[in-house]
Length: 433
Image (tube, rainbow, N blue to C red; front, side):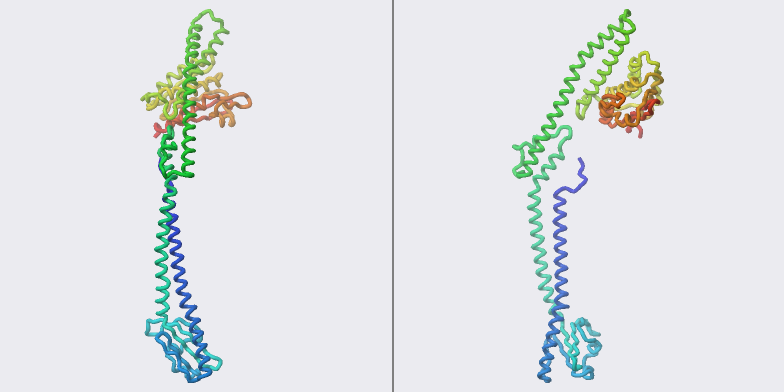
C-alpha cells in the first residue's frame, strides 16, 4: 500500500533538526545581544565612572594629569573658549554618549562628552577594538563549542530515540506488507519476534497477532458455514425442482394446484439464485469462478427467458432491447446472478404493464412500470431485509447485487417514482471510456 505521509523516523529526524537549528539561532542572537550590551552599556558605564573620578581629582588638584592610555583619550577644557583646542570632530559633538567615526578615519570611537556646572568640559574617547575582540573570543568561541556539543548531543539523542522506536517501525512495516485478504500473522507470534521488540512494542505485536488471528478464524468460519450450508441446501432444492417439473407434466392437475405448483417452482428458483450469490460472496477476495470472455447480450438473453417463466400469466410485457453489445472479462455467472436478482425484483413488483431490459454501451438498464418506491424506500433499497411500514421491501436481493457488483467495480443504481415504476442501472465504467 502506498505511503503518503512521513514515517516516524523522518518525523523524529525533522524534529531534531528543527530543535538544533532553533537552539543555534537563539544562541547566536544571545551572543549578538551580549556584544551590543558590552559595547553600549558596559563601556558607557565605564566612561561615565572614569569622567566622574577625573572631575573629583581636578576639583582637589587642578593640575592633575589627564589619563593617557593606548585605548583611552581624554580632553579637558575649563571654559567653552578652551574647548576650541579640541579636535574639530569632537567640538561638534553635543554632551552625551556617542559612537562616532571621525572624518577621514575608519576607526569607530565610543565618546562621552560631559559638561560640568562650572562650564568645564571633559571628553573621553575609547577605542572599542579590545571590546570587540573580547566579545569575539568570549562570545563566538564558546558559542561554537556550545553548538558543536549541542549538535553532538542532539545526534546522540536522535540515535537513541531511533533505536527506541525501531521496534514500532518494524511492526508498522510488517503490518504494511500484510495481504488484507490473508494477513501473515506468524511473523508476530511471540516466539518469532526480534530481540529488540520489548515492552509496549511486544504488547502491541501480541495484540495484533491475536486480533488478526481471531479475525482470520471468524472469516474462515463464516466462509465454511456459508459454503457448507449452500451446498447442503442445493440437494433438497434439486429434488424440489425435479419433483415440480414432473408434477407440471401431469395434465390432470387442477388450476388451483397448478397455481400452487407455480409458486413452489418460483420460490425454488429464488432460493437457487440466493444460494448462488451466497456461494460467490463466501469466497473472500476471489469468487473461485474462472474468468470468462463473454458477451453481455448473451447473459441478458438467458436471464430474460428465465424471467418470462417467473411472470407466468401476469399481463406484463417483457422486452429486451439491444442498442449494442460488448464483452466482459469476468465470471459470467456473477453477472447472471446480478441480472437475475434485478429481474426478479422487477417481476415481483410489477403486476401489469411492461419490463424493458436495455443494453447500451457500458450500461444495462431494467425499467418496470410496477409500484415504484418512495424516497424513504429508495434510500433503504440496498439494506438487507429492510421493510417499510407498509410491509414492502426488497429482501436480500438488492443487498447482494450491490456487494457482488462492488467486488468487480461495477456500479448499480436505482431511480424510482411511486406508482410509476423503477429503473435499475448496472454500469461498467471500463466499457464507458
